[in-house]
Length: 290
Image 1 (cartoon, helix red, strand yellow):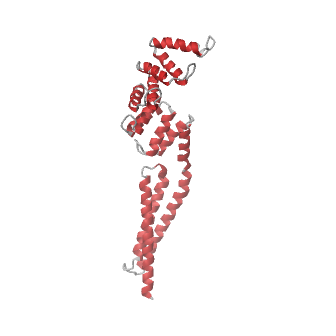
Image 2 (cartoon, rainbow, N blue to C red):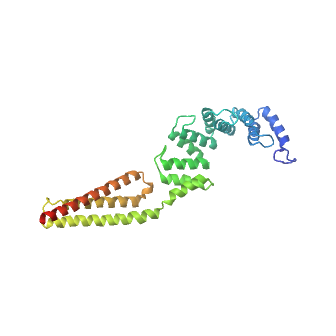
């Protein structure tokens, strides 16, 4: 009452005196509040060691917020020697009670391998527990894990979904990540891949038809131009197939995105090689005719 000025004049010093009396009698809630008062330096000079002392008292009674606060103290070395193992131990105690901030913290420690063996799968599991409770930091971190394919298959749709949840709560990192992912817009895929597919399809059919006409005119297989033209036509048809696939599934979110680009590079290189082969054969034929 004294702390908030409810029913009595606000008096921090008097509030601290009564909180201390209750804390010394073992009331975990008051021990936690007293720890917060020392941590924030409100009504008393800031004292990290005093904060950690009272957090420990409440944490040992099973208070999850106090356990999380004590974990933070160990993680940052505020009031106690820095100790990642102790930070992970206290975070786990709070996380197992469903305290979202501790779940997010434990997930981060697994992701970074601090105080626990590095384990992206465990990181994702703890991030998810906190994210499902609405913790914006955990939602942002879970989005990052999906975007990078750490602990889960890379899935940009899921990344965007979790980034958006965090961004709607004002998380700046999530807002920036969401903007970066969405900047590669769906229309850009439509404008590039569909015309590419149609152009490659028409080019492939033209090369195949030209090669067939060349052979029908009685040209033998000793002339490598129809062979190169046929292969080039098939290569273009394969490229058109890739473009149609990229357009249909929206290649940004395909799990085979890297394989898609590698295939496209190989097909383009093959197309260039076949074109050079056909040109050389034509030059050779012209030289022999002359």
